[in-house]
Amino acid sequence: MYVLVNRARFGRDGTFFPARAWERGRMRYGRETQSTLSDWYYDAAAGVLDVRIPWGLLNVTDPSSATILDDRFAHGADFGTTRSDGFRIGVLTIGRDRPGHVVGALPALGPGAHWRGTDFRTWSWAPWEEPVYHARLKPVFDSMREVWRGTGEDWISRGKPR
Image 1: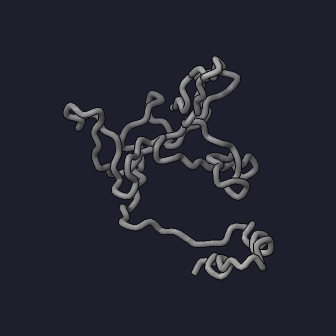
Image 2: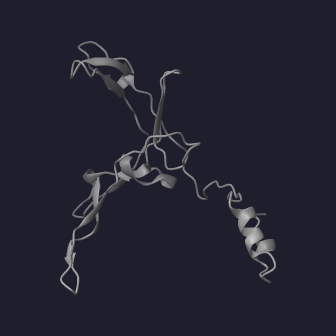
Image 3: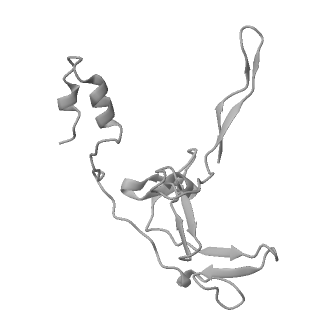
Protein backbone atom coordinates (compact mmCIF):
# COMPACT_ATOMS: atom_id res chain seq x y z
CA MET A 1 0.00 0.00 0.00
CA TYR A 2 1.50 3.24 -1.15
CA VAL A 3 -0.37 6.30 0.18
CA LEU A 4 0.00 9.79 -1.28
CA VAL A 5 0.08 12.04 1.81
CA ASN A 6 0.77 15.37 0.07
CA ARG A 7 0.05 16.03 -3.58
CA ALA A 8 2.52 17.82 -5.83
CA ARG A 9 1.94 21.58 -5.87
CA PHE A 10 3.39 25.00 -6.59
CA GLY A 11 3.80 27.58 -3.85
CA ARG A 12 2.63 31.18 -4.28
CA ASP A 13 6.21 32.16 -5.13
CA GLY A 14 6.37 29.51 -7.87
CA THR A 15 8.42 27.00 -5.86
CA PHE A 16 7.57 23.42 -6.83
CA PHE A 17 6.87 20.99 -4.00
CA PRO A 18 6.93 17.38 -5.20
CA ALA A 19 4.39 14.87 -4.00
CA ARG A 20 5.20 12.99 -0.81
CA ALA A 21 4.12 9.44 -0.26
CA TRP A 22 4.29 6.88 2.51
CA GLU A 23 4.73 3.17 1.96
CA ARG A 24 2.13 1.87 4.35
CA GLY A 25 2.89 -1.78 3.70
CA ARG A 26 6.57 -1.59 4.61
CA MET A 27 7.26 -3.50 7.78
CA ARG A 28 10.01 -2.28 10.12
CA TYR A 29 12.73 -4.67 11.27
CA GLY A 30 13.61 -4.83 14.96
CA ARG A 31 12.65 -6.23 18.32
CA GLU A 32 9.58 -4.90 20.07
CA THR A 33 11.74 -4.15 23.11
CA GLN A 34 13.77 -1.75 20.93
CA SER A 35 10.78 0.00 19.39
CA THR A 36 7.03 -0.49 19.55
CA LEU A 37 7.05 0.39 15.84
CA SER A 38 8.95 -2.81 14.98
CA ASP A 39 6.97 -5.28 12.88
CA TRP A 40 9.29 -8.23 12.41
CA TYR A 41 12.44 -9.82 13.76
CA TYR A 42 14.35 -12.98 12.88
CA ASP A 43 16.40 -14.68 15.59
CA ALA A 44 18.72 -17.00 13.63
CA ALA A 45 20.15 -18.63 16.75
CA ALA A 46 16.71 -19.63 18.00
CA GLY A 47 15.29 -20.23 14.51
CA VAL A 48 12.32 -17.96 15.28
CA LEU A 49 10.66 -15.42 13.03
CA ASP A 50 8.47 -12.95 14.96
CA VAL A 51 6.02 -11.02 12.75
CA ARG A 52 3.47 -8.42 13.86
CA ILE A 53 1.16 -7.72 10.93
CA PRO A 54 -0.99 -4.57 11.23
CA TRP A 55 -4.76 -5.12 11.00
CA GLY A 56 -4.93 -2.87 7.92
CA LEU A 57 -2.53 -5.06 5.95
CA LEU A 58 -4.82 -8.01 6.64
CA ASN A 59 -7.84 -5.99 5.36
CA VAL A 60 -9.45 -5.98 8.81
CA THR A 61 -11.84 -3.04 8.98
CA ASP A 62 -12.82 -3.46 12.64
CA PRO A 63 -10.88 -5.92 14.79
CA SER A 64 -13.27 -5.47 17.72
CA SER A 65 -16.04 -7.15 15.71
CA ALA A 66 -13.81 -9.35 13.47
CA THR A 67 -15.02 -7.48 10.38
CA ILE A 68 -12.98 -7.67 7.16
CA LEU A 69 -13.21 -6.23 3.64
CA ASP A 70 -15.27 -8.40 1.31
CA ASP A 71 -16.21 -7.16 -2.16
CA ARG A 72 -18.82 -9.91 -2.57
CA PHE A 73 -21.06 -7.91 -0.24
CA ALA A 74 -20.49 -4.43 -1.72
CA HIS A 75 -23.86 -4.22 -3.60
CA GLY A 76 -23.02 -1.00 -5.45
CA ALA A 77 -20.96 0.50 -2.63
CA ASP A 78 -17.25 1.16 -2.86
CA PHE A 79 -16.56 -1.79 -0.58
CA GLY A 80 -18.36 -4.34 1.53
CA THR A 81 -17.56 -6.04 4.80
CA THR A 82 -18.31 -9.36 6.44
CA ARG A 83 -17.55 -11.01 9.74
CA SER A 84 -14.53 -13.31 9.60
CA ASP A 85 -14.14 -16.62 11.36
CA GLY A 86 -10.37 -16.01 11.42
CA PHE A 87 -7.25 -16.34 9.31
CA ARG A 88 -5.46 -19.30 7.82
CA ILE A 89 -1.84 -18.33 7.29
CA GLY A 90 0.90 -20.12 5.40
CA VAL A 91 4.59 -19.28 5.14
CA LEU A 92 7.08 -20.23 2.44
CA THR A 93 10.83 -19.71 2.50
CA ILE A 94 12.44 -19.43 -0.91
CA GLY A 95 16.12 -20.12 -1.56
CA ARG A 96 18.24 -17.18 -2.69
CA ASP A 97 20.55 -19.33 -4.80
CA ARG A 98 17.63 -20.99 -6.66
CA PRO A 99 14.76 -18.53 -7.18
CA GLY A 100 11.43 -20.27 -6.87
CA HIS A 101 12.90 -23.24 -4.97
CA VAL A 102 10.95 -23.79 -1.75
CA VAL A 103 13.30 -24.39 1.17
CA GLY A 104 10.61 -24.77 3.82
CA ALA A 105 6.89 -24.33 4.38
CA LEU A 106 4.48 -24.03 7.30
CA PRO A 107 2.23 -25.91 7.16
CA ALA A 108 4.16 -28.52 5.20
CA LEU A 109 3.33 -28.73 1.52
CA GLY A 110 1.21 -31.69 0.49
CA PRO A 111 1.41 -33.86 -2.63
CA GLY A 112 2.53 -31.96 -5.71
CA ALA A 113 4.03 -29.22 -3.52
CA HIS A 114 0.60 -27.72 -2.87
CA TRP A 115 -1.38 -26.75 0.20
CA ARG A 116 -4.93 -27.98 0.84
CA GLY A 117 -7.44 -25.95 2.81
CA THR A 118 -7.50 -28.64 5.47
CA ASP A 119 -3.74 -28.16 6.05
CA PHE A 120 -4.33 -24.84 7.83
CA ARG A 121 -5.37 -24.11 11.39
CA THR A 122 -7.64 -21.12 11.87
CA TRP A 123 -6.29 -18.21 13.92
CA SER A 124 -9.16 -16.28 15.44
CA TRP A 125 -9.68 -13.74 18.18
CA ALA A 126 -12.53 -12.89 20.51
CA PRO A 127 -14.44 -9.69 19.70
CA TRP A 128 -14.52 -6.98 22.37
CA GLU A 129 -16.57 -3.97 23.42
CA GLU A 130 -13.84 -2.16 25.37
CA PRO A 131 -10.13 -2.52 24.54
CA VAL A 132 -7.75 -3.78 27.18
CA TYR A 133 -5.20 -1.15 28.13
CA HIS A 134 -2.52 -0.56 30.72
CA ALA A 135 -1.79 2.90 32.12
CA ARG A 136 1.89 3.62 32.67
CA LEU A 137 4.19 6.57 33.06
CA LYS A 138 6.43 7.35 30.13
CA PRO A 139 10.17 7.22 30.88
CA VAL A 140 10.48 11.01 30.62
CA PHE A 141 7.82 11.68 33.30
CA ASP A 142 10.23 11.99 36.25
CA SER A 143 12.55 14.30 34.29
CA MET A 144 9.70 16.56 33.22
CA ARG A 145 8.29 16.61 36.76
CA GLU A 146 11.63 18.01 37.97
CA VAL A 147 11.65 20.63 35.20
CA TRP A 148 8.17 21.86 36.07
CA ARG A 149 8.45 21.55 39.86
CA GLY A 150 7.90 24.87 41.57
CA THR A 151 6.01 26.48 38.69
CA GLY A 152 2.75 26.42 40.58
CA GLU A 153 1.24 23.87 38.21
CA ASP A 154 -0.68 21.10 39.90
CA TRP A 155 -0.42 18.70 36.93
CA ILE A 156 2.34 16.87 38.80
CA SER A 157 -0.17 15.37 41.25
CA ARG A 158 -2.71 14.72 38.47
CA GLY A 159 -0.18 13.24 36.01
CA LYS A 160 0.22 9.83 37.59
CA PRO A 161 -2.15 7.11 36.39
CA ARG A 162 -4.47 5.68 38.99
